[in-house]
Image (cartoon, rainbow, N blue to C red):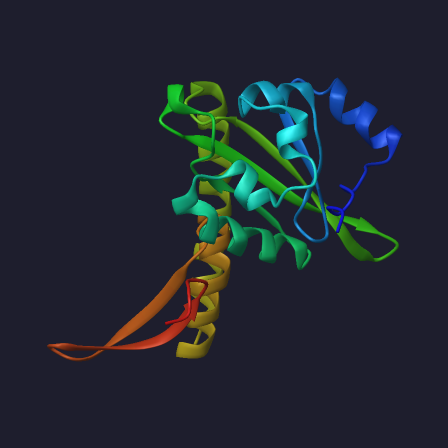
Length: 193
């Protein structure tokens, strides 16, 4: 039996990605790598042959981070955007601190894949800009909390909006039952079991 043929990217998309100076990886709807631009190949210290056609989680992320990466990709391929830090492969010089921005790509009203952009999380200008954006998102969520008038509303804001604003893949909210007991009222993400 022959191995499956790796998926291919549209030539126009490839030329656009290759012109970017930031590491850019194009994924299909099944989370496989379609294309990595030259900046991405250098950033991840790999070759196109090692990436194209492989699972993005396996090809780009450290084994201990593949579960969280899968959770992020599931969320993004459901139509949202995610931004945050996850350790990736090939980045020993930065202790794996990589800032990622992953955006769903929509074609004719449905999600057809995703674009992953990666940069060194240690750059002070980039870090300052991301921090300012995150603080702005958290300020908006804080305003939402001020208008929440019951536990379900607060729970939704905490486990969805605050987690998204902070770039978290897992969020929970617990309330005290008594001096020694907490009750879990909301949970998003994480692994079953």
